[in-house]
Image (spheres, rainbow, N blue to C red):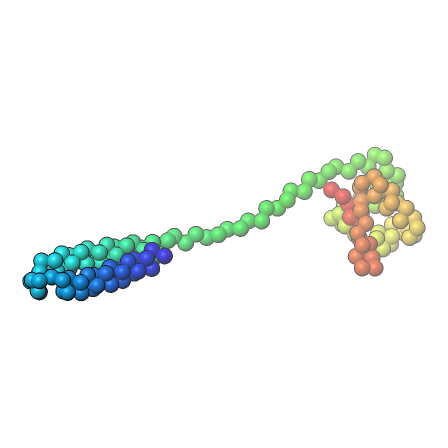
Length: 151
């Protein structure tokens, strides 16, 4: 932006000075020896020099920028593992909780039925009890349920 502004300033200075020379040429009676021509030349060089300095500053700013590396860190949510109170659970409910712990907190309901050798109706009732006690949760995955230990 600064570079563009300096170029525009230099063009305006040159256009102004060319127009000023034409005006001086038409109105000055001394001809080419008129002293005003010298002052216009000095003003032109001062203006062009200032515009050049602004241009150089713009170039310096463009090429001297430090490249900053953008680092995006994903913050892992700390999952608070709540201690599951198994004191109020019966033997079969405790077995389900232990199996879920061994399987890292998740297992298919059908697999749970096979490992505990329990039927559909009984596993459904046991899981209903565990869900009501906020210990486990069933999540639907297609035609199957995944039983998840709440943490």
